[in-house]
Amino acid sequence: MNRPVSTLPEYFALKSKSNGKYLKYRRDDPKARAVLQFSGDELVDVLVKFFSDGVTGHDGGSSTTYHLRCCYNKKYWQKASQGESLIIGGGDTPDDNSTKWSCTLFRPEFQEEGVARLVHVQSGGYLGRGSSDPAAGPDCLIVVAAAERAEVCEVVNYREAVVTLPKLVAFKGDNGKYLKASHIKPIIMQGGMLKMNAPTYKTLQFTGEKLSDPSVSHEVFVNPADATISIKSGSGGDKGFWRRNEYVENRIFLVESESDRPDFHDKETLFKVHRLHPSEPLYGLTSCGANNMPCKRVDHPTYRHCLRAQDVDVEPYNKLLVEEPIVWRRMYEADFKTADARVYPVEQPKVEVLIHPNETTQVSKVKVQVGKTESHATSWSNSYGWKIGGSVELTTDFTGIPLVKEAKVVVSGEHSEEKTEGGSQEESKSSAVEVEIPVPPKKQLRITTTVTKTACDVPFDYSYTEMRHDGTTADLRVQDGLFTTTTSTTVVATKEEELGTK
Image (cartoon, rainbow, N blue to C red; front, side):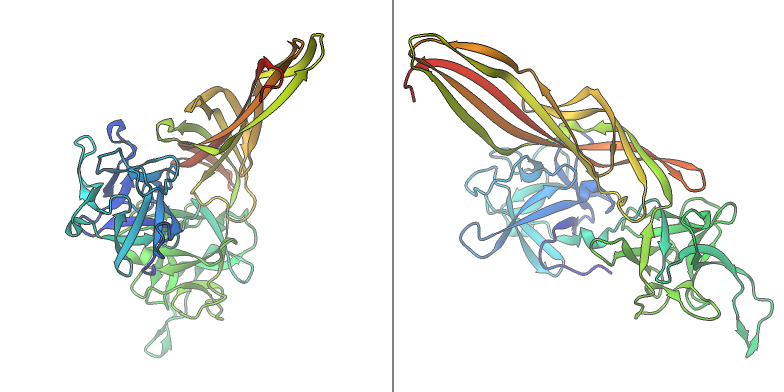
């Protein structure tokens, strides 16, 4: 169960108490781009995920205000324009100045644990639900004057509520063995006697030895509404979905289904994922069924190493080391959303001036690199749970990458290469040439070098193919990528001046 919050979490989602929808960044309509609207039905969506950056005492007080950002493209919340009441995710940089309409500061007012309304610091107005622009549609985030019009929201701690796992996983228990599909005939007592004709159940045991064994692979289906998961296990024709069986000591069995899709309405087949370690891929699972208990490895002679959901005090038996039974993964067909890109200065321009005086009566010459040099450093990230456990060869193949050109984002069609996950690429292009510049007698040459560094964050959709240990491949399409390019531009210019000019 997710704990209620009384401060704004670092990563959060807002769910309207009045219409039951999540606040969502609009990217579907160019006329309503960057509008924040209470229209989201799914919690597992990067468009409803936001980031808070706290600023304490900006106005001389002790209260905490926040810059709020969209995780989709890292843009800041702010008014759409001066005189507007519409709040959009459109700011490229933070603005602490509460006297300017472009101020990006907000303050939460908690009504109770996990329930709050927000104040726009610059105007002092509350954030409500409505419309100030017909093109944006209804239920948009706007500034309202009256407190009774403020939108009261459930504040969801996203990091706790949404813990993502890859599509295909393997679970290693505290005994060092992998969880795998097995057949077990349980011991059932009936009328004080052993029932001899008890059926054989397909269940799960921590007895797998190798990650390459297909029976230790488990397919994860995420319920986008609340981030619960359904899991399908087994190999060949012997597959089934996990289900808690309350009649056999709450053990987790595999049940066959006529459909390849999970039933998200059956709580006994759903589980909640919990992160047990901040950096290591250790996770726990809790049954969403009637008993709502954590899952653990059973150390029992009859059902040795089976999985069940029953005990509260479960350490270390509940710890699951998650690995990926994947040989390699390849990303391709990136669709860069340049209209949603964030462009921002990395640092203030650096200017260096060198003066070459000619105090003689003869013409002197100075060799100078004149022109422009550009260097690009690129990297990418995603919110999908890939960096987890085990070793998976991952490459990306992007034809074209986003670059900053004259303060605009363009996709270069000349770039195609493979990158490894987590790495960055750097390249440099120069139009500068070395020239000999004559400096007349009693004159000086001023050489000005200006270095500017600008970055862009560009969200992108992409496809990927993964090769699994059983020799099969799977193709998926997702929309959670963020590509970052930092462009450093060096421009050298020269000017002839009178000797001694400062």
